[in-house]
Length: 215
Image 1 (cartoon, rainbow, N blue to C red):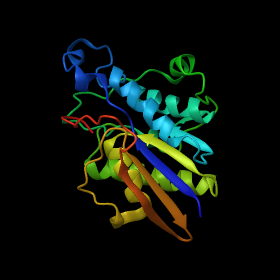
Image 2 (cartoon, rainbow, N blue to C red):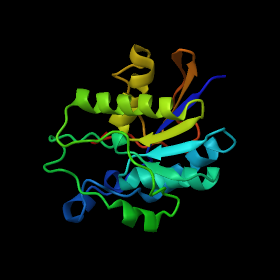
Image 3 (cartoon, rainbow, N blue to C red):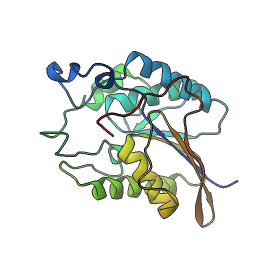
């Protein structure tokens, strides 16, 4: 089997469970995981235990870092924060550029973060749907190429998960498909083509919350 790129969406987020959190939050576009989201992240980590993974890359938003941290602890790997996997910076959802915790603060909270890593692709506010897909796809291709033949795991958001998958397999990924919370995709390089071998698996979850508002 050739190089494998695993792509996962973050687990459930606090503002899906408690929408009022958004009204008073200091960083309202950067919610943490909900309590059940923490459980989901652990379930995803358990699912991935035993898989051969060499590197974990995560969007720098808190919910993706928390999800990646559960995986990193189970797999005993560092986390590389990659802005190219960031949330869709959509002006219809976000009235201003989202504020995130600085990397040094995240690294204090999550010591597995590799502070020496330099992100490959920038994410700039505001951006269109096609732009988020393009930069996430570019990110996935760049990381897969640089770290080939090693197997990598990307942790992102609905739109960046979709864009990353599209960037590797193109039209083989259905752009209208809903990317569920904590869903998992497996894409395998069989030179020179990529093949989607696992599509949106959530069988590792005891419960999957429906997405209401955000990607």
